[in-house]
Amino acid sequence: MKSTLIDVHTHIYPPAYLRLLRSRKQVPYLLDLPNHEGDEDSTHSDSPSPRLIILPSDNDQRIPPAKRGRPLDSGYSSVPEILEFMDVHGIGKSILSLANPWLDFLPASEGPKWALTINQELEEVCASSEGRLYTFGALPLSAPPPQICEAIQSLGGSPHVKGVIIGTSGLGQGLDDPALEEVYATLQQSQTLVFLHPHYGLPSTVYGPRAHESGHVLHLSLGFPLETTISFTRMYVSGVFDRFPRLKILIAHAGATIPFLAGRISSCIEHERLYHDMDGTRVGGPERSLQEVLTTNVWVDAVVYSASAVQAAADVVGRDRVLFGTDHPFFPPLKAGAEEWMSVKTNVQAVREAFEKAEVVDGILGGNATKLLDLP
Ligand code: URA
Ligand code: ZN
Image 1 (cartoon, helix red, strand yellow):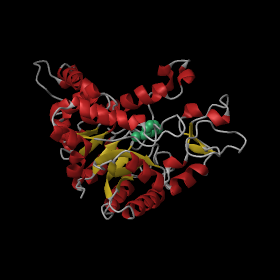
Image 2: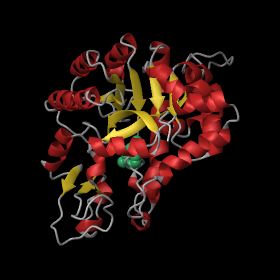
Image 3: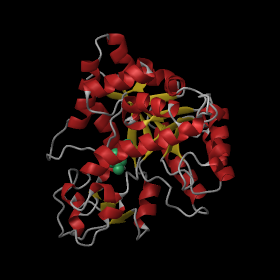
Image 4: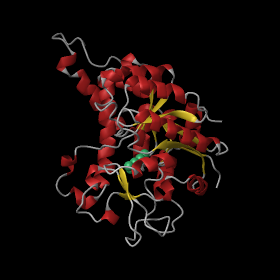
């Protein structure tokens, strides 16, 4: 297969991160299973994979250990397996990012050194990949802002780093926190692309008392995009893009539900009394229109498994601002031995179905990423 696809949304837990997870007893942590507790979910090996206890709801002692959280097989960390996955699916280049929950949970004093170690490991992996792998670096977001800024600046010296990945929690108060201004100033000044990715979902009460019957379905399909939508909209309404009009942000999962809700968000702003005086003159709220921000500051990936959804995203942000991704290795085939991943195939097909013009399809599947990330 011709390797022309560029995957901007693909994750890894590098060895240092696995050591960190293994050293912990609180979420997130790795739960090793004794050999006899066979793991029927494991697709990569006969010995049971450790379970990644990634959400507070995974840490439920009523669930048998072999069913708790997710199986973390070698596909989450093995570079040869990543390259093999790329070959099977015709992916020429991938931008690896540390998977959630990144370094959010670390004490402030620990974050910077782990970020350094993990980013070094990622840079080394990419440097020896003969041009196939690049990375979005991890940030120590629990550390004081000057140290976060230092981490951003130090990434500038790594040739394979193409931006940074962050979650929605910021310093713990979300991405509209005034304490983040210094960080945004550094990101803008260095023109560092920010890949905004969910992890926390919504408060578990919204899923109701039967949530455990559907595993991660509600969290991943609804919690993830709504978390992202809320986080970005909070940034927008608090004026982050007015104060930092050159920030560059790549929003995961085709912009979550932002493309669909953009009109509604704008209308609510136009009708918000707090933002208007008695004459109807605008006195507050974001200055730049959401449409302007979405077409100048925002890029989205195409990880949405639907032609109409990827088309809607492209209609709102622009066809040259949509970039193919896989979310590897989070949606593996559940049938043992399957080579092709349905999750990947569905995303490629959605792009091909949504757009008639070859130049648009080629742009989304690779050309747009080449341009944005300045790839060879
Ligand atoms: N995709 C991700 O990136 N992370 C998850 O935890 C699940 C799906
Ligand atoms: Zn992801």
